[in-house]
Image (cartoon, rainbow, N blue to C red):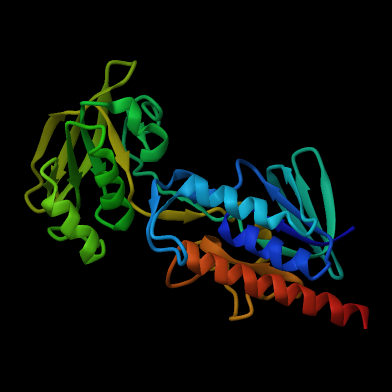
Length: 305
């Protein structure tokens, strides 16, 4: 029996582990991959206090090491279901069941798929969702980036160190990214833009992507362009499927909490990108994690009184 099980080892989950274990609680962190979450797919971090610039993986490693300083245990597992039995919560993985007094859900979110023909077929063969992971494979090639927000433009800029040219494709005629990021992109000679346009099909030779069919959303015209790689950044979807039966998500699948990170079930909390919130950043996830780590201590203390 654990005091708290934390599902997910991103910045929020690792911060919650630090706070809860430092309060002398018995903590288990369950992560389906490498600790760090989206940090592992982030090239350079420039907006986290204390670091003028640090790579995502480096920051993830520092957080992981810190999160284990007070005895929190990390294990690998794919959570399939959580059951609420009042004072006991059961967390089901594929080959193990864990029990705890409280659960903190920090499962995060995943990159949204476009859902066009060829996307699934050529995923990993020219279609990517991670510039840090795959950018180096596309040296001296013309790459396309789909999206117009912070992630799309930042990753497009990152790709310019490898690519001969990067074309950012956006369904609108203006970017949604922060102005400072936009300015960098507009000044970069390797970056081009395709406005009012969406991809409608990824085509290839059964081995890798070779071209993309684009549609102008204003005129309806469809054109084909040769492509040696495409990176998709059109938004995020919450990773909440294992928690749907708990009745703690909204219609879009995000988990609803109050300012104490509490869901509508006593003893179950949610933090970070999986939460219904206005901003999803490293700093906000860390803030959520610190609150949740303290709140579970208060909850358990009251149970024991």
